[in-house]
Image 1 (cartoon, rainbow, N blue to C red):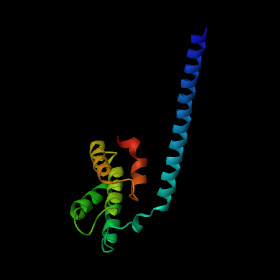
Image 2 (image 1 turned 90 degrees about the vertical axis):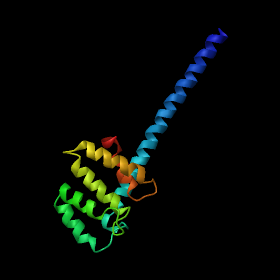
Image 3 (image 1 turned 180 degrees about the vertical axis):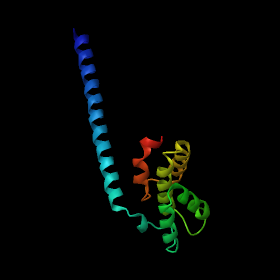
Image 4 (image 1 turned 60 degrees about the vertical axis):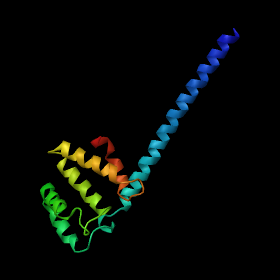
Length: 136
């Protein structure tokens, strides 16, 4: 009889620990999502460092032209001293979102590249993290 009671108690404790972990995981996910939404609301792409002011108008024109305009802009200025992270990453995310409709493989490739390059301390990281489920 003692053995049966010990088995029941052990199973009860294991079940309680499992449920406790589920509750903690949900709380942690909600807290992380709230932090991502807060930081996304605070960031303005024009306030990010990494792009010369002279390129602002060129970048705006590229945005107006859509995916093709951003692709040409990135091809011309990526890797130069005029365009660096975190602003480069922000523009690449914009391009990735535009191209995802017609070329999902290209969007996943860009996401993978950004995921390797952008670290959690970057101001662009919350935006990239929020897109994780779409581009895995």
